[in-house]
Image (cartoon, rainbow, N blue to C red):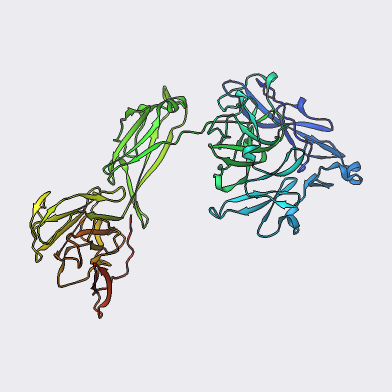
Length: 573
């Protein structure tokens, strides 16, 4: 056997689940009625040149068990008390789990779902907001508790209570994942924990959800969560916790219940550990990178101190395009920038039917010593989504007799849209703020533009354009100029450009609302269409026009819809 630098005592709870050998670090740790055998596996101890090698403890002849607990087969055949509640005797395997869900249960009836656990069972209910999530439900005095509650002891009685308000804080500093245990004489143990606990009294602290190196958190085999933490609305969920040792990251297993609490913080229902020298770890998870999705630029920012504490070299950071390096520092963060354009710094563009999504990944390598990296590189994938379904208004009071044009443009969403009123059909000279006289017979030349998208595959489609007598685009008094991408009155509306490029143009004869109205405001709803996925050109359909009416002032205006759209898949952002 290899000489090891640390001897690890791993004692297991007295329940035999299968007839297999128990794993230890030395033969001296085997219990009575066992025989020791070496395993051809080892693990390097943290911050040490020593190795710990595993051995197995097998039950001797006449005894049945897993090598951790060996039972006299003859005595247990006639004594049912050999096994703990939730287990039954097997002459071959010892004490094995009873599947409580194999028969209908009155305490776990539909719509609840029965889930078997080692030595017990859970009743689960599906979350209305997250159908894939299942909340563990408890009963108290034959009463089903609300989702997120447990049956807890309090004031001498059991009642349904919120674990977020009934827990014990485990604040030992050795629980942190960066705490290295180097002394066998002071190894910690969580085998005696039972109930609801919170790790540290600090917001954001939780159990790690990735494998922790051996000999961390004050123990030899650190425990971590093999799964994702729940959202607050998911209630109490069941997750598998794992202990890392010579056979891998999940050599020891134990179910843990978790609930997300306001703050935020998490509480955990522990039922001991699979043995001693195992401890439930605590960590502050990696901070979420800050992401700024601007009109022309995308930026991702990360905490410098955190990156350096992880052994990452900020100078090595690069985006998917290898030529894009460099960063700037502000507000204690390091920021990396790229343009909002496909191909810029390796940025990839995709559309999903409602948004144009720009994706990239920031990669930061670990510090290098000679020709080797001491820590693996970290990658931070990110994406910015920009809506394709936009709305813009020409907030100009167009007064048919004599008016003062007040040109103010507003765009909705993260993509800037602009609507301009031009002086003639060349669409080259927009009106500027000031006074202008527009006779009732004038023609309005209107242009709509999307400014922040550079890819040629996108085109602007005018969905609906309408006029109101006030600047409120929700005004019930309105007259549709374009509806369902087609001009409503072919005699006075001309579509000069639509669905061809990132600009659309149309003209319409100036009109006046019936009633005490002197102004006309124009509003347009637009789509940004991906021409690589569908045709972006509206198609006329020759059918008898459909007539409807819309309130306008004190009278009614007839709105003629004279075309029908060809059905196509349009990707709207």
